[in-house]
Amino acid sequence: MIKLAIDLGSSMTKIYRADTNNGVVLAEPSCVAVVGEDEVKAIGKDAKNLIGKTAEFTQIVYPVYEGEIVNMQLAVAMLKEFLSRIAEKPSALKRAQVLFCVPCGISNLSLNNYMNLAEECGLKKVWFVEQPYLAALGSGAVLTEFDPVFCMDIGGGVSNVAVVSGCGILAGISMNVGGNNMDANIISRLSENSKLLVGALTAEKIKNEIGSLSPSALGTMVAEGSSTVTYQPAAVSVQAAELTDCIRVYVNKVVEYTAEVLRTLPAEVAAIVNRNGVQLSGGIMKIPYVPQYIGSKLGIRYRVCEEPQFATVLGGGVLLRDGEELNRFARTID
Ligand SMILES: Nc1ncnc2c1ncn2[C@@H]1O[C@H](COP(=O)(O)OP(=O)(O)OP(=O)(O)O)[C@@H](O)[C@H]1O
Ligand SMILES: [Mg+2]
Image (cartoon, rainbow, N blue to C red):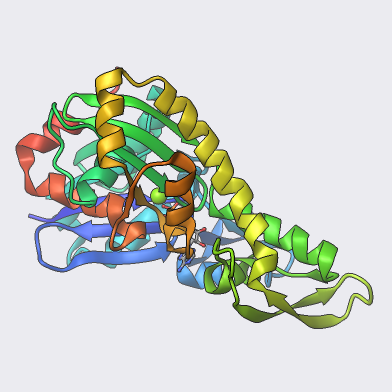
């Protein structure tokens, strides 16, 4: 029987297959290129490559954004396409066990949307588990009642911060802060300082290639776009040090909210967090010195998952392999 963990991230959809040894079987941008009202032109990588390059009537839509299904019809089209790349036969999906990673503290209304999405895609046996449990499990933690785990995940659109244990989420928050804000900030910075307008794809590439919070970040890269003075195609050299602020301001925001979460912890839990530190995941942890920076701001030790972007979906795999635990952590409508 097929067993899948699905993380419909704001930037990237990840699917893990738990009934084989294949691990992560799909990692594709969570977007759809749409022509006119609703004609789907491309999905995933092919759609993302079109960002900023399309003619007037084509738009690129992220149907699941910041953890919410914002466009059901396109979310269904996207997930159906991704599933078709995995399942040998569509009929096999009807019997598949599928776990969806959902944001921390998801509302009943949003959870209901996830249920409808699953149903529309022909999935019958589904579970919904809040992201912090999965990030903890995917990082190799064992969730017991006695040992809470403090996790922080910074993704493309959402950051989740929580202290979780086998008893539940002891304290947690999900906020709409992430890599997309950093990319937008890089666009404004280059436009102000270098008089160059770059597209979203270029901004993301610059962040991922030379972005760093190191005090001595040295990378440089040529950015191409359009001059804001002559309106002609142009290129400028970008220094990593110029980007530090664009990234740090959002990491600081997450750290600020985190401090609020930590303030509410009972003393014994605070003691464990102090002793064990924070477990970091999400694509933004790949930016050099972000983990060190967070650790030093919080004044505790930190650990980063080996593959930070996949921590959540790997945690889904852990639960799917252990049926009993799955029911313990699954979220149902209250
Ligand atoms: N090598 C890299 N270096 C820096 N940043 C990266 C790298 N790879 C991906 N990112 C960034 O990480 C973010 C995506 O992370 P992730 O896949 O964890 O998010 P998501 O799960 O899709 O979204 P969310 O959890 O916010 O809904 C994007 O901003 C992306 O640009
Ligand atoms: Mg994510």
